Amino acid sequence: MTPHDIHALVKEHEIRVIRIFFTDILGRLKGLNIHVDELDRALDEGINFDGSSVEGFVRIEESDLTARPDPASFRIFPFDHGGTRSALMMCDVLRADGTPQASDPRQVLARTLDRAKAMGFDDFFVGPELEYFYFDSSKAPIPLDEVGYFDVLPLDRTADAREATSVALQSMGMRVEATHHEVAPSQHEIDFRYGEAMKMADQMMLARLVIKEVARRHGLYATFMPKPIKGENGSGMHVHQSLFKGGLNAFYDGSDAYGLSAVGRGYTAGLLDHARELTAVTNQYVNSYKRLVPGYEAPVYVSWGRRNRSTLVRVPAFKETANGRSCRVEYRAPDPAANPYLAFAVMLGAGLDGIERELTLRPPEEANIFHMSASEKAERGISSLPGSLNEATNTAEGSAFLAEVLGADLFDKFIANKRAEWDEYRTQVTDFEIQRYLPIL
Image (cartoon, rainbow, N blue to C red; front, side):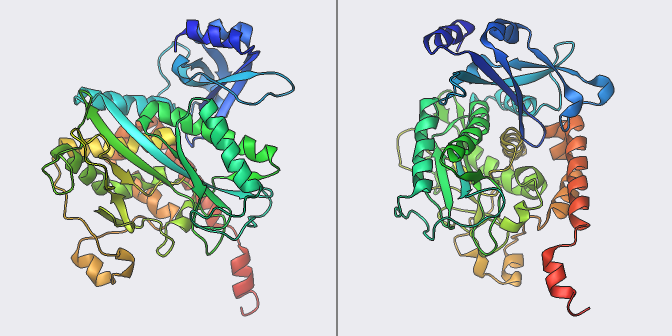
């Protein structure tokens, strides 16, 4: 997509407003609207904004930053607002002198992709499975149905909203492979065709926006909160991933029992080796750890397998072809509230580290780990992911690997943000405590 292409589409579709976006370090969408007459200036120079008000960017005395749209991210928004058509673009955040802002999450992913290219890999592909819930409002997580995994009926407004979302996303050029009802009541999933990581991270940010907007138009509230309902499965964002080199899948080796090359094995071993460290990024909220508990299909144990869905990393069965294009690994811990730029970056960084260090991939686990005793897991060397945001933050804070991938500036700000969130959470007096302790103490 070139500026010339963008101008042609703007004219053809009578676009009047360009909505330009970036994210803070937590992946919350930020942005502003500009009139179409400002498009050339935005593409050439960027649009200035006050960075001191954005979580994790700059201090007040360094506030001037610039948002410069990436032409490759241009998409036409499928809905009018007040009769006005608009288009969307994701931005790189720059300092006043035009250099990249180090704590811009998009820059973190770009740096990690550059590292992959320096190692000889042309493309890092990811395919996310995005889960979320529909409720009547943001006030209470009351399920709107009583159906489960892959159920078709009832064809109610949640099903209508999900299918309308799929149509809207595809109209924006996003390749949706499938949509379906998930395990929990009122829970749904949209699976995306794999694509290049930066494009996919941009796509995830816009997809979350569209999912919420379509829900609103159907009188619903869509949420990516990892665990909104006690006693039911939470929402995940499983991420399928692979590295390509010279147009060929670098993970594939047809002579291997699991179809994995030395690169694929090293990558998988790197994910396992750094799993505990990167969990604070892939699961960044207090609520994330209400999902990561045994018994609700969420991955808790650091292990890998082929068909075993109790493992953290899975190597899905794939159609055997001459080049093994579908060979991939699936990392199952992330949740849909994660910042996709940072989540993709730390997973790729872990895999690249495993390749560089030529880590040995231990044998797969094909038994149900949820049914193993503590001693059995210890004998097999199966550790657990952090059980709380506090534990995850402590683990992340001591990780030289994570500091290198995120960069010192963003790393320090991210840890500080997680510390503040945990401190706020741990000082709350909850309904559970009142109901349990007040009558007896």
